[in-house]
Image (cartoon, rainbow over the protein chains, first blue to last red):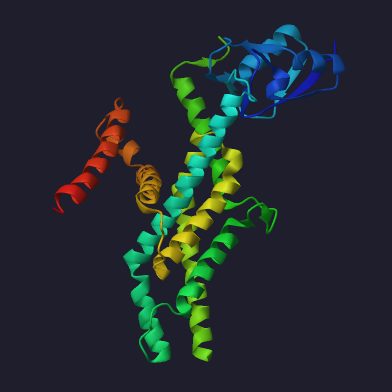
Length: 212
Length: 138
């Protein structure tokens, strides 16, 4: 029989809701033979306990073994990472309690960001003595001492806000360019680090699903 | 008039430079990504960015113009709690960025009990602030 190539691309990490982990939940498969593609897509790789929230690391080797057990003449070519992470969370995404909880979380983080940013900029301005520098600058330019606030403060505030908008690359939902913002980039980097750390520590503690 | 315009331009550029530094620091230290990750609200990151911008602008205006904020004790408590959380996160994130804990655990060969170390540090920060404000000042 002629050998068939099967290309496998599994996402680095994915969250699933049902108890039986099917291959199509976590990645894409390409194969010339439609029957094999369909069968492999619906192959169960692992089963989870119903109410348990787990973060499971599975190696692609295990998946290849499962496929080869069913179809010995298929050559599996892995296009992704050697292992992948499945987060099993059996929760109702639309339950009222969850939505309210999420709203509370978002509001809290917003408040922390808002007051935290306000506080840190105040301490910064105080620390470096912005007021003194401004009054010196004013004297240099105008040859007299400033009375209260001057044009410098106005410019500083405008510049601060403008600079933030430029660096963060958006004004609320309106973006200046379609590039991801620096925070979005950082978010993805952190996600990658967390995935790597999860895979490594699972490997060290033998909590990985691998070929025997 | 020309002087005024020049002053305005200088301060505008100053503001942009400071905000650049502020954002670079906040992003490098990973505090917002950490908060969003912990609360599983990564999709709201744009909203958090808006809040940072809003917060910096408000704080700046309030400080420079000595605005009066008629929110009394409750307002101060709200401000204190959230500004405190932020500063705490900042201190923790700073320690994390410079790899204090991995280096310490390697040097001293501590492989267990790191959570206790971190708890001790957090309690120490609280205690230190308490001593500074309530004991040393009296």
